[in-house]
Length: 320
Ligand code: APR
Image (cartoon, helix red, strand yellow):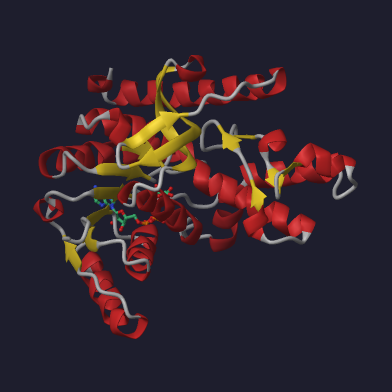
């Protein structure tokens, strides 16, 4: 069977890390695309030269031409600019929207059957615009946010409880921003919900609240430390988990920014919700019932995403 073809649109910090992880996991052949000349070619060659040591077989082609992504099975989009300290994800909107228009046209022309994972920020608005610009089915264009946000949440919880990260599950809903909604009652250690762990004396409500806030600010914490860019190891790992679930038809339950057409009372927006990802793309959106406090946080998050999409429409009226 021919290997899958995975196109990385954007070969910066996340793009390079994606290529390396895809190689290590032998998920398929990789095409690194970027407007910067030499960067995708150099990263591709460097990673290919690690393959004899690591023992993986895959081709890594670097390119500045969209034609090279032809018939890709998966496209992972990181093209654009990342945050600098003091910037919010939303500050990137104007520049990255123009990038999404170019990327959408390239994917539409050369890889219309691909499963597309968008990482570029502000995520919920960029994935919404990318779907419109590309015209690909809504089941085949998703945003990577929830896997990363819940992974951060899981890591902080595992640290607090001094247990393996593998035994912590966490649930995050809503937009990828300060309004994200970490759901403590659906987050567990080996199936025991967090509120029960508070009752059992494993932690306090105050400590949990702090962890929730640190999760919300997870991206900014890294930006503040790196100073010259934003996170890339955990975002890349999260997108690879989504790509793997699609390519291997694993049907994993993953929180993603998915197109809502009435679910959770939301229409024509991308918002973070639990989904099932398999060879049909986003095969199912899981609707859980929210309590009053959660619904309030979710509504606030949806309002923030709506505001970003409106800002996009003001810049690019063809998105309406
Ligand atoms: N087409 C293709 N590539 C582009 C374009 C474009 N129009 N504009 C910029 N790029 C490329 C840049 O040349 C750069 O190599 O996108 C790459 C982005 O890489 P980095 O600057 O290293 O950013 P990275 O950390 O990978 O983050 C990318 O993901 O998490 C988000 O907020 C982050 O929006 C940012 C994106």
